[in-house]
Image (cartoon, rainbow, N blue to C red; front, side, top):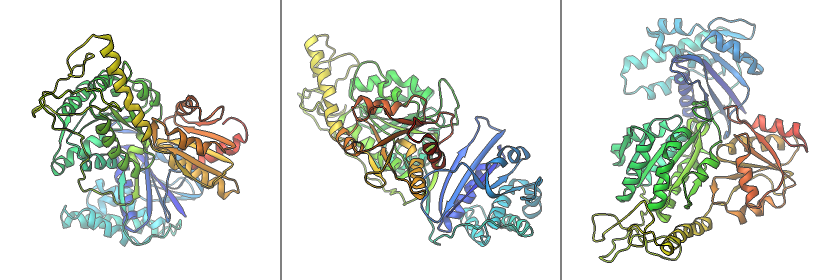
Length: 559
């Protein structure tokens, strides 16, 4: 059983604060929670909403409809009322229908807490009452949440929560909520998972220019820089960011940078520099709709081809695309290990939906477990770009016994510039030889569902959760569907993918873009031929309901 609560209002009104209170309180009660956001690119005004889906089992995606709408403005109620599920209710200041539950949020906050700013706590109390939860559960979480703010703040928030519950209690309205285990669960966002994964893997230098949705990683690392012993630098632009990361990597420091599509466009020359110098730079790219600035606060999977081919010339790379919060943590570590093992740029390709997603997960290990930087001590006759089998030359860093020479032009084994054509061929072959090792270590796609399923949903990155829920919906209706999810999109583990794809009768690729970019990669690899596509490119994330409905409508036709 699960319930979807949609808190909606203007930017700056406390929509996210209310949602975050509910997320924390429900997790504290031992419930499974998954929260996602829809917000406009403006500081104040507009229409934003924060969905809090709460259940008695693990949740993997959002919902199209809401069972409870908490409308902090009249416009929010008017626009989103039509998205209420059958039997859904709306909590708002000025009721307009028999199913509406009146709660004067700001007035109640002023009366109970002395400030309209606590209207979000009133709203949270109201939600608890609508779902039939004892408000003491919320109060217990508030005591813990505000423990460092002083007893007066705690008392005022508890008073506001109780007032919100009291106002709803008078209406006698209730949507039965799921029952929790009582054992508190850990809540984490996708962005925080990336940051923790990087920090615990031994990241020592992170630099970025703020750009939604990757800014949350920059913020988290800056807040925890001292505890992990790292330097976090807000660069003046993305060109400086990638070049700083290259400089740090040259010096032997585990380095990473983050951006989104428009910012990455500025980084491309620096990415080629990392390819030529054979530097282990990790680059986080949080996708959002383009072209140009596009829709800065919405989600997309439109940059796969861009990331794969970015940079002039040819050089090896790996691209990881986590599908869950846990994978965001694990694959960030893997990205850093891969970059250092093969001395080449490695990408973490995610998107706004997964970056902003909050969910209850198994606690992430926050202990430092530094990766092997694969650095050698060298010798007086050291050659940075020695020709070796597999293409991975011994890597020493400046300042030791070895004399380390690097050059952005083509160079010989000693690092000095060379225009000898035979040297060029040898060095290019050496660099590209790394692709063999990268391919041999490529992750197999993850399979979810019954063997021999009638429909195979092919997903990559953040579409995994919604696709998984769609497969479950199909199964509940008597059908048969499975999901093949790629958390590494380059290079591909072709043998493992072929084994799963070979027997599929109906293949449907699910992607957040208009041109089925990943399907084209699979086709180039000889893994699929003509197939169906379920594509979304309006800036909103997929849901399991939507995918299942489009599967059913399409039948045997192209979706």
